[in-house]
Image (tube, rainbow, N blue to C red; front, side):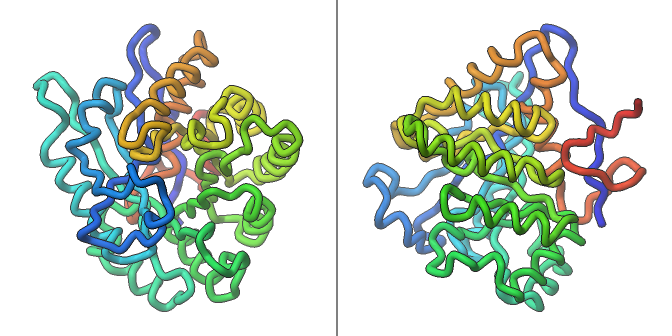
Length: 323
């Protein structure tokens, strides 16, 4: 199994920290069907390209992006892999002083076919830039998809390869399922996208969500993304961020833009306030801030077949430091 332990990322006091956008969508309507867009707001029903968000992310100090699949097809994942290579080839923005961006992919694999997954993981072309796997379970007619025996065998293959599984939009249908998956696959890192999409603004349901989040956080190989919150419930994300920091801690949290999904589609008007809020909440603790802004993502999202620091395999929250 690939060792997920790498040193914690720290910056000199007062230095501007680079950010990993751990949840960026770039879809091309000519490459894959994206059937779910038919029911999405009309403003989202167009292609989203790197050139449309590149400079905005550079202004927010983003130096690494995780391109996340938006269709359960090989074509969408292949598109993201081509895009990741192109991003790394070009650098960022128009300024020579802007640092080069690293790009990786959370892609799709046919989890219901473990033989096909095994073949895919052995194929360098399929695993190029691949750092995780996701399936749009919230769109699956079968709410128990991730607990099918065949899918379970595929999840064991992901664990053996050191690849995490992202779980999207989990509340309410999949929150308890994440808890069960963590128990059934203790070596698999599970990433809760968007904090499960908490019902922000609904006091009673927020209590239900928090209780479920606490059960998820109790599993040591679970991590969560502070992402997609501006379009969750009423968008008032401060209570959800506070709960996540309390239950997971900074070393098991990462930030993501969820672009182009935002209160105003194809803008960063949800991500910029989130970054400002996180920086304010963790002001004075550069180590904790560095974890949330990029350290957790560096440990969790590592390319298939990459080697890390020597030592025993640890949980995503371990920083590799002694003492």
